[in-house]
Length: 409
Image (cartoon, one colour):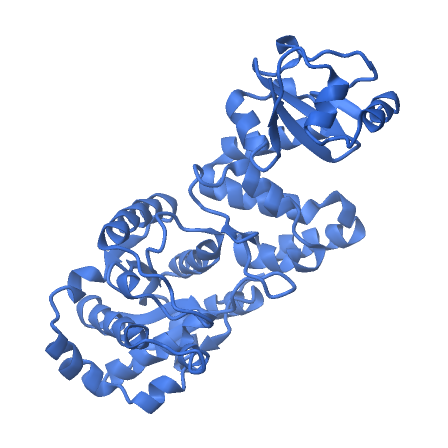
């Protein structure tokens, strides 16, 4: 299936808005310099960034040149959130995060990285107001969705000025790097069009913008957000196994959309995966393929294989095949309790609240509901010793089929 750049982006659901129909031909012809930006609110990107940066890589495959802008300046201000003001972070934190994002982007994506602090730091307040603020009508700024959503609760002038700073970035890259296109998620549409307008008014030139729908679950919650935490691209923050578990448990209704947006799998193959998935959704063929594509792309095939190995150890109960690091990754979100060596299993189950009483603990054991390190235990007199542990201190208790607990002797 041969597609133009624009056709493929549309097929994958990666275009929500473009600033001008002229952009379609320019996308198909190749040769554009474009940028995609992120503010350094942390020292690692998360899976939400990944979807946007894959768009940049797709454009690069069609002959366009990507720049990644890390917002050392805009990160000090903060893009307005729809519901509340962002907490300000220190200059030192921003500088640290910029370095983290820069090295990560170069390693994972191979992008050329620029920092808007480099061209913003020497602009004084009078230059900012005369050379840039002059071109922004307040009524125009108030009409932007992000600003409008904050009018009832209030928005500071600092946040209000953010779109001017982002517009300044676009104009700077337009003038110095012939960067004619900005790409982002749909929540950046107002900031992008502000940059296009500044370039038109101040330089009498034409620039373009393109935004993609935000990747969410079926309820509209941002992809990769788990209980308020992000899935980080830094393997030291989110292990391959954690990433794997999140991905293979994604809902069936969204999985084909994710394959389109988050992988480079050819359309014909995605259609075949969709067919197999619909015929046997319980096999999670689509989820497993998504996990393989993303983890291999981010961390390599070895890390993907390790994630699968940990998952299979849980399924089989053969925890002794896992290394100390794999055990730590596997148990990252499980409750951990400390128990004295020599404690009778019945007492240990009660002390750790796995059972509510000794009577209930004995029933669990007699019924074969309790496994130690994957092996069923029906010994009511069982005493826990170091020999029972995986690594000299760790014991995995499973109650029933899916409830796991960690005990440290």
